[in-house]
Image 1 (spheres, helix red, strand yellow):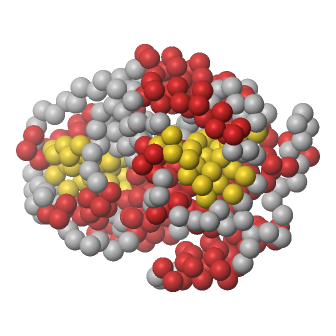
Image 2 (cartoon, rainbow, N blue to C red):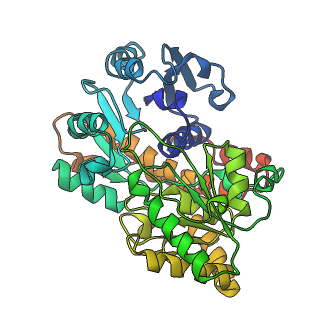
Image 3 (cartoon, one colour):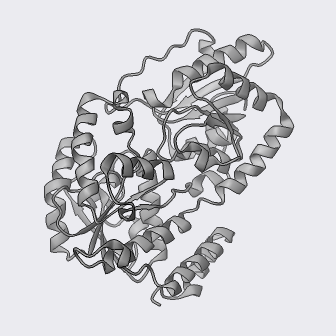
Length: 419
C-alpha cells in the first residue's frame, strides 16, 4: 500500500489532538517497514529524524504555523493534487479535518462531536464551519476512525452512518509520561511538591470554574490543608470565552499557560493528585497521562471518561461541586487509597499503548485498501492473521523493552509484516 498522511497537524502547536496524531504516525512508520508512507506537511519537517526511514517520503509544502486560512486552503485544494501526483492508495487525515472533495479512498480520525452536542462551548465561526464540513467529511470518507465508544455512538447518531463505516481505535499515552525525569526544575518553580494539577485548555467544557470553586471549598473547610492548585493550558479563539472566578486563595491558584513536554511531565510527577472535571471528552488523555506518571486521578463520570479510566480513578458528577470537593479531600488525606489508585492506574494505562493503536489502524488500512468501490464494506477481508500476530508480537516485546536496543530487536525479530 502507498499511504498518504495529511500532515498539516505537524506544523500546529502540539496539544491533545495534535499530540495523538503525531504519536500515531511516529509509531506507524517505526513498526511498518513494508507499506510506503508519504507525509504531506510543512517544509520544516523535511529531514526530521522522526521520519528517517527508507519507506517514508516527506513532501514539504507551503504550510505555515498560525496561518489558519492559508493552511485550510492548502488542505482543501493543494493536498488532493499532491495525493494524485504521488499515486496515493489511501489518504489518512488523523486530526479531525480532511479535504472535502478528495475522490480517492480516504480515512479520517474524528475525535469527538462536542461541537455538535454542545455548540455553545465554541466560537460562532468554529461551530458553524465544523457543523458544515465534518458531517460531509464523515459521509465521503471510506472509513471513519474514532477513539471511544462514546464518540462512535455520537457519530452514528448525529451523522446517520452505517455502523460498519466507523471503527473504534482507542488512543494511548505518550511514552514521555512514563520515562524517568531528567530533572525537577519545573516542579521546583512551585516550591514544594504539594499541589493539585489540572491539564487542559481553558474552555467551557473543561468545567474549570467548578474545579476552582471546589478547591476554595476544600481550603475553607480544611484550614490545615495548604495544597496549591496548578492549572496548565491556555485559551484558544476556537472556544467560547471563559471568565474564571477566583475569589479566594489567589496566591495558591497558579496559572502556568502552555508548557514544554518536559515541563509537563515534571508537573505531573510532582502533583499530589490530578483533577479533571471535564463535562465532555472524546477520549480524555490527561487522566491517563497522570496515571502513567504515578499520580491518582479525580475525574468526571461523564461522556467517554469512565470507559477510559475504568476503576482506577475516583469518578464524580462534574456539575456537583460538593462531590468534587469531597473527592479531592478524600484522595489528599487517605494514603492507603492513593497507593491503591496509583497501582490501579499503572494497570489501566498498560491497556493503552501506541503499538496496540497501530495494530488497529493498520487493520483499517487493509480493510479500506481491499474494498471494491460500491461494494459493502462488510464483505471485505480484514488484515491477514499472520500480519496481525506479528504486530501483536511487536507490541509485546516493545512494551516490555527496557532500552532502545530492545525496540529494534522487537521489529527485526518479527521480520517483514507481509504474510
